[in-house]
Length: 550
Image (cartoon, rainbow, N blue to C red; front, side):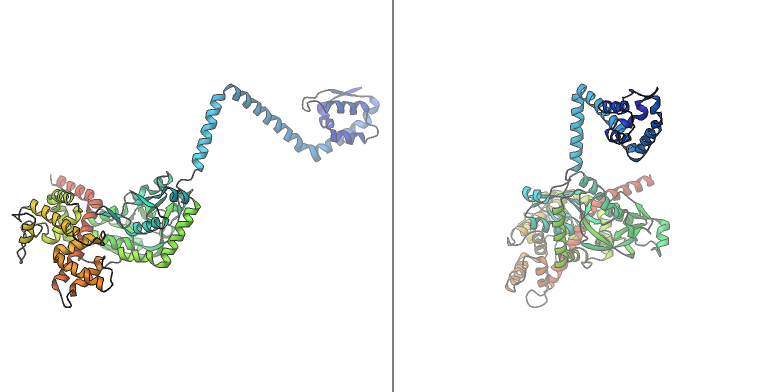
């Protein structure tokens, strides 16, 4: 007799193969009986001996060949799967025992994992339904004057006005958070806002960190340099020197041929550095460069690059699809109606209202003279409830911040008050600078309060400034005439156009008032811009000059 272990012929214990063995007429019964018994046991652990008689040996080769064929044709994969399955169940057993022993730890880990998954999958902003239900939409907006600026505690700006129209369409309040452009996307990702705006240019980077809307405004890139320095003549020269660029121009394929030097500062801070001579070249858009020219008179444009850049708004990566759809629909309608272009023309395509020379002189006096009067302007404006930059601009237009100023008509002092106006305000000495500034602020406030209630801000302020110059009587006469002619009498632009011929013939005081208000508007913008974007850099430069002298 010869003994064979079942493990050598283990697959013969599986019932399908046992059926095939039964087809052999001379298969020993002892072998088949063993297979039947073994099939009910642990397949891998079976090692029962199978004893065959000597006369059955001729059949052994046939059985072995049959087993080898069956393994190769069907059971090779099945064996591997069973081994893997056994190991999986083994690991499950270990985990089960660990779980029973450390149930508290397992529960804490499970809860932590669940919370992490929920946090990652959560929407990063309010959905459209939530915005409408809560009655407010949260917007992160870059702190740059073409996007948003504050005047008389009210918001204005190219993108702000479009945002306000969208909020009005939804019937919700607009909650604004002014932040540096470089922080927009981090705050948006952190769920601090529903929308981010601020001259965002569609790019590979923006699409990686946020969900941009459709392009709603197009611009061209331009390189700026300081007036009085050599202008760049070619891209090769620019690339040799390098062009400073704010983070909004990061990874824009259309600008890949430029040698851009990434900078953490805002674009207007970079433009201020060019204006002050700290850097030689900076990148901007054509519309922003035109806007910045009045604030920064030393800026010159070299040439405009041909590629068009798309301006977009941005939502978080996991934004509500309905909110994105609603925004895109609103922006498309704004383009079709011409509203987006109208706002762009209003803020960026205005004719120059002061010369470059006047702007340069004003900037110099802002640095050298304004500090002597600023505290008083701020104090008087708080008492009268007006903007201090406006009061400073009014004083600059009247006297160039000189308390010794005197006009041919007899008005005197820093605010150029007439004798009658000074008496009505209780001012005995018009050359008393403190009294004159307080009196002018009070008088401007009185004029504003006496205007018809239909006139709203900021128009109301410009009506009052015009009345400060030409007299309230003439401004109200123009208001009445505009009403009679069916014109929009609540807009200063309407009244300004009427003043030069208010009484049917040339009216010199009306022409003067028209130019007076225009110049004060520019002066106010320049002083505000300096206060927000240039003061720190100018003061640092002044300190360096003083140190170099020592």
